[in-house]
Length: 378
Image (cartoon, rainbow, N blue to C red):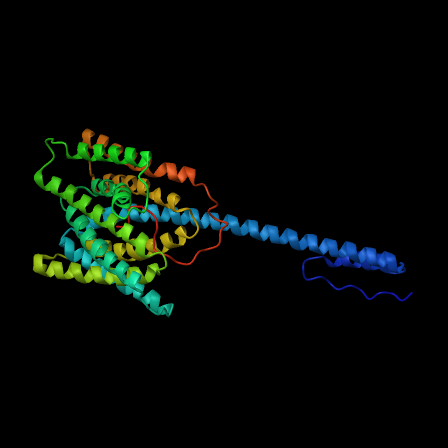
């Protein structure tokens, strides 16, 4: 019989020596033996392809897990440090002016990103509701309250008080929009959180009028953020979060700067290297990079897992405030802080445990507005 031509090296990774062995075994063999040998070679090639695919998928999943874990840690670190950065940015700069300049810069950065993406902005009725909600409730009133509060209370205490937002969101969802059921654990978490807040407001020698007003201002900002979140859940399911934040931050920046022009004296502003860098950090990292990482995460992780950052962020803020600003709290305040965090934990941890779903392997979903009851970025 005629000798078969030599089989070339296969693209999928069958080595040349192995192919040569098969060729030598084919020469002088019968047709039946040739077919058997070719079938064996095909099975070897399929096995190699399948093995390489499994290896590639496994490596991809490991890479994704590492990326997700790194981004989650980055978000907790950035949003935990923004409370400290706000405190630093307020040295020599009025609160409403500082917040307005921050979001003016952030709006410019996000606009450049949208321009590079050649994103066309087309707003539906629901989109317009979300833009107004974000711009007025969050980027104006919420941040105005938080910035003013940090003039009178510590950055760590502000972060802890603001972490009550998930509890307010649960109440609003149950009694206002009636979109969620208030379960026993939610009620218990709310009651524990209220008890912790009461401990913070309990009269003592270090609690002055301005400190109490600062804490009330933080809780007001938290309520504004909770109302916005409930609104976003209802109207923002199919909205582009980058477009919403671009327009919302722009609206909030205009409102803050107008408020500053009416109430603050710009002639008293003292620019320093520290407050300029703090505003730049808040604009780039706190308002652009952290939001981008967050939107990446909510497509690949369960929302309740992401919402656990609500417990981590205040702890980071307390640690950084203590390390860099020598912020201290009284023993009674420590009890109140722990009680508040325990209340938030009781309210959100059971859902994170009950809804254990695959977090990495699912395909990225279309971009939507944030759907978690976390404390929003500062």
